[in-house]
Amino acid sequence: MVPTSPYALILDDHPLVAHGMAEFLRARLPQMEVVEAAGADDLLRRVDMRGTSAIALIDFWLAEGAAVGLIAQVRSHCPGMPIAVISGDDDPAVMEQARQAGAQGFIHKQAAPETFGLAVEALLSGLVWFEPGLQGSQPPRSRDLPVTPAELGLSTRQGQILALVLQGLPNKRIALQLDIAESTVKEHVTGILERLRVRTRIEAITLLRGRRLELS
Image (cartoon, rainbow, N blue to C red):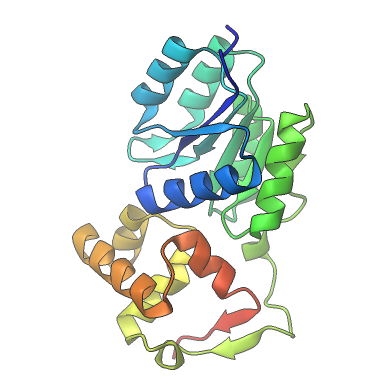
């Protein structure tokens, strides 16, 4: 199927992340419509209705679990559609699973916005994009300036949550890792974004590039 007009599809089960990526793409590629899917079924429904999108950006970890099956399903349904997987995981196995499922690209959630834009443009041009190394698996750079949660105006708990946000983890996984309610994580994330004076997680990650968050 051929779309009536070029559009990009985004599926991330965290609305802030999805919206941040969408707004970035709208600014970088104003000629392209950007559509945010509400879930796996919604993504497939939109493709059925509108035809193959110019690119699909799919979070590896969705509410239902790993998106490997969805990626393979989209690849079978739309063989020519470029698929980029987005993830905050540092495990190289995640990138390899995405590749084997049929994705043409893998973009780490800690990538710089410019890197994200270049990756999307490469995929739109028919190229592949798999980052050679994941940021989180590398030791902190010596030129990174240390900063504490207190210096950012955050509580100790907010600092712990921010550290996991900077790794690209969604609320559900943060809640499991810290053994707290997902609703509590959501409240803290809202407070963190307000304190940092940013609107999205991507903006928070961008703001803190060059800083090394130190938890006591």
